[in-house]
Image (cartoon, rainbow, N blue to C red):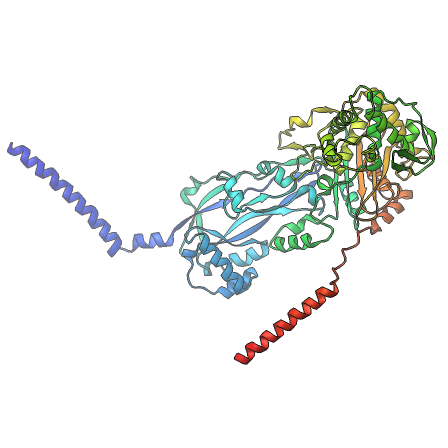
Length: 640
């Protein structure tokens, strides 16, 4: 019993001795020895995030559209900052003391102990100057990243831009993004963000007391490498994209060109455009505001957001529905006295064509012929009434991609405008019929399409009955992944047998002496097309051309819209021919280069809105207010 009692005290004594040794050692380290203290102070472990290079974007021939260049973010940990020469730091990085205080306050609000960006996107030259003197600025260090660079300064609307993440972006990213990260905000950069962004890496870096990096902790055992974003091969052809932007310089409008067999978009021009390099770097915010102020809406992506009445370019589509429904054939003849009259409504025609059939009707862009086709479609006996017939017709038109989005791989696509019968019943009660909406026969009235939709109609005609969903990226990554949706044929509900006479008429429009699109003729290439002169309630008519080439085995379908430019044959048609010839031949012959240069120099811009003129009553009111303010100031001065 005594032995057990003694053992108990022996064990307790051992525990007490060990505890005293540990406490003594800790006391010695903290009070008497500065070895460990100096070690802790002189070695700081920081997590440095290594940002992946965003994926490079190439054109269809693998020419670089977007690449990366290095920049450096100056980081700060507010709690580590000691007294230093702020003017020296401001002088190196190119800011004033007001900006310094603003940046430091922002960092403090974010976190006293975690690193945050103090000044972003310093150039290589600034970094070199800063790195030599960084030891003088405790609490500051540099973090590298890359930004976008655009060698040809083209395709801003197509490519889009990246921008620092917002709190909403961070919240939605499920932990991927952190403050100071960048994200695609528009264009392909946004549509393919997850493929382009890559994966962030981490380096656990040790710094000494002089703020000098001493290497990765544990020789990098706990570090992870950044993984670059995927490479994108776009469908764009730099040659015709650049030419298109030059041809539409100082004009408002759009060019969309599609390869019919694949749905790949060859040119995507929105004018006025902008140099995408303006949306990069420390001046991005100021440049953005300057673009926003432009009265011609530079940031509007017209190929997918611009609404235009298709005008006469709609006539081939409606003729094909007429052929499919059997209400006309290629020899059906109507008489054109220079107008089409039904009830109190008269639609004028540009010509008096007399008896005219399909081919010549399309070549001459006869409004009367188009109105008769529309009348036949909406008065078919198989329908109980014209409202039912209209809805049937509207569904047929929508198969071509009008009145809905096509699903292009870009954010912000609009669907156009094409109403069903219920809309007109609400607008006109039950008393309406084909004569009420006869303007639709010639692509006017309550019908709007985007330039993309117009080009897609041409692709469907070129393919004789189907289209592939239009898209801007051919493949993703080293494995050249292609989305399955871009291999599917979308049929428009018209048999291939009916396309011959319509294509004949479009060929004559370009190549016959009586055609309306002679300005789009190309030597050695049979181009099929259709001009349009689209009514514009806010000014001069828009010039429109749609077409494809060559007739056999078509390689390009195109839509060109030049706002406020008048007849389709004057501007839109020749622009389309230059783009098509450049794409098919890789050059424009000397006898046509003069026309190209002339077109580049033309300035066709809508008149700027006039400043509001104050009425007499408004001027009197302003004078009274000014007088009242003057009296108030006088009273205030007297009291003083």
